[in-house]
Length: 399
Image 1 (cartoon, rainbow, N blue to C red):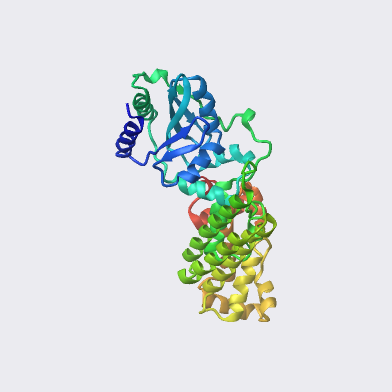
Image 2: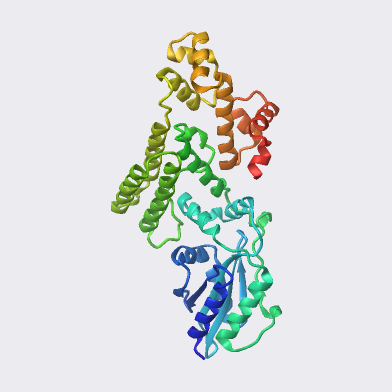
């Protein structure tokens, strides 16, 4: 029986139903082959979440297949090829989601794995990959697993013969990590939204969110190489977000390439670590510049910039008049004539836009967000938020 031919045929048949990939590991856990286009990254995920080690330990002493679950709701299935009773190769199918998963579910799963100290850019890449992972009913995955076992051994099994490892329960306090990093996948939305809008006040807005980092998993054999990859991935995401924000593709890609080359030429982690923040700040400033409304007079643009930079304070028309050297009466009429909004409405909309970012990118309570944006009460903030967006703050956060 030619195992490789059998598995190649099975892989083709399974892929007729969707992007479900097969993997082959030797007895030591080295990846021998895969038909997954993202094999380097996903094989790292398989290892990082402990599934590979669990598979090898189980396969050394068992002949029956196993399904391997994670707190993110993704599954792999593994079957084993033996020689003289010893593990020769482990064949894996996946990853798949075993049920429809919400962004909140992914966030909770990432919080469970926060002890791994993965970087923001790595997590961003993971989130992108997860959008491509198919949902597959357990019974179908189990039947595929039995087919895989038959291709390797020629032996028929029943579904009840499959060992099914229960995914970690993220709401179980015994699984709680030693420290609770902020919602990584949510932080990505906030980080990229700041780029799209060219928000110069991003440091204050995301002060309670994730720190910009080129950090890498501590178990890496080549921390500098892994850190470079993190910076490159993060730079690519920021580059695309800047184009969505209005920066020309030519300028964005040229700038991104420059930072990627700088990352590649770094000799030490000390050289590399500040690069993410420098790059992020550079892109935001360029997007802000290109989004500046040329139809606004300089004094009104000054007011707009002042508002964006002081959303955590109580802003009055009199304060803006002082900034630009106009009387309050003259400024309020000029501001509305150029922007179409009175000053108070503009401030209100700007604060709600900031609140939307904080709701999606931090775990601050509604009360804390209301206070940070200088709303007098939580109820008043919620009423204004619903008036502007058509949703309550919690409905927006959960959506």
